[in-house]
Structures are given as structure tokens and as C-alpha cells.
Length: 290
Image 1: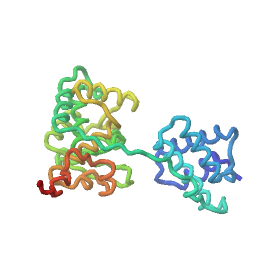
Image 2 (image 1 turned 45 degrees about the horizontal axis):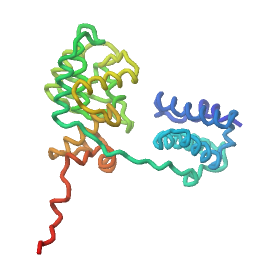
Image 3 (image 1 turned 90 degrees about the vertical axis):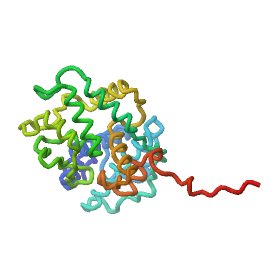
Image 4 (image 1 turned 180 degrees about the horizontal axis):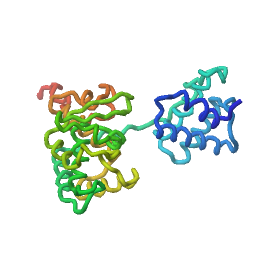
């Protein structure tokens, strides 16, 4: 019988052709945490709802957020389910017996149009050179902001862009790998196309935006830009571009969900900033005053 870690490496990963490197890493971290909590390496036959429930409960009490705990729950249940599918276990997990931690979802917060303009001004005035030889830091950051604003793409999608993914003739950008697992073609404004021209999109380098920083450092740089623009930082940093792009499209008569290639349900729950969109109070009749 496999240990849990052995099954993950030899059974789970080969069976999941769509599993990204980052997702595999998160799964493995989760298994390591479970083994450490248990005090010794677990066998896949050791998996039980009681075991997972106890681990996740202790993990939540250690100060981890409910969303982090629920992510670990998803990873472990997925590995257990695959072990069952490969007939290594006699039954699948009974998911209802491993309840999710209660999450309080924050209200999505978009940048206002004035805040977007302020961020663009900050970018235009940045001194120094960018990681792309011969390209100013101002041009580099402005192009990054413009792509996020136009497309509502995720950080990982923008970071993976290759120069060949941008067509300045057609004014489009192709995100080859998305969370949905399918490519997405997005339109770019002419001003964004002009920004991208300065980054030499016809070059042979691996990435359009040569990221010399870790994600943590990139977050710190963006935080600095927000402070320079006088914008309070709340919630997820780069995710706020996606909220902004979707919300402003919806506010101006478009389909915000379609714009970011997501479902209406997901848009309403995660991306619709209620401050920007019509409310229902105007439809509520007022009682007559005596």
C-alpha cells in the first residue's frame, strides 16, 4: 500500500494532466502539513473523515483563515477521491462529514475611474529602467497596468504572457493558460497597444513582461504605487484590477461576466462592486405621509 506522499507523486500527479506546477506544489504542501500534524507519514488507507476533520479543525484554530483551511480540504479530498477511482481504496470520501469552514466573503472593491487614472499617472512618472533592456520603467509598468485594466486578467495569466501572445496589428492578447483551462482572446485598447509596442512584442524573450521579482516583491512594488496614488490598500492587490475591469464594464452597459470570461454567478459573488451599479431603492415606493 502506498503512503499518502507516494500515491500523490506516483498516482495522483500522473493522472491529472491539467494539474499546474503551482497547484501540485500546494497539494504537496498540504500532504506534508497533514503528515507533520499526524506525527508520522500516513498511508492512503489511513484516510478517514474523522482524521481530516480533526486536522482541519486544529489548522483553523492555529490562526489560519477559513479560505486557507477550505483550500486544504479541497486538496485532500481530491487526492482521496483519486485513490478511490484507481481502486486503491474501497470507498470515496463522504464530503458532508468533512464540513467546510465558514467564510465571510468581503464585498468586492473596484478602483474608481479616477483611481485608475491616478495609477496610470504614477506609472508614467516612474524613474529608471525596466527589466526589459532599452525600455523605461515607466513604459513597463504602464503597459502592465493597461493590460490588467483592459482584460481583467489574473496575475498568473499576465505573468505567463509571451511576446508572441500579443498581436499589435489586431489589438488582441491571447491568454493561453487560464483558470478555466481554456485559452482566452481579449481585446486591447489602442492606447494599450501603443504601450505594448514599446516593449518590443516581436522579440524572442520568453515572457512579454520579464518579471525579475518574486510574487511577494511584485506585490510590494504595487503597494508602493498604490500609496503614491493615494489609494488605500484593501483586500487582494492584483485581484482588484479584475474586479475593476468587470465592474466598470457592467456599470457602462456591458456584460461584466463575459468580459472576464466567467459565469454570472461568480461575477455577482466575487467581482460585482455594488457601489458602482444601480441599486433597488429607487424601485421601492414610499409610504404616504399623513
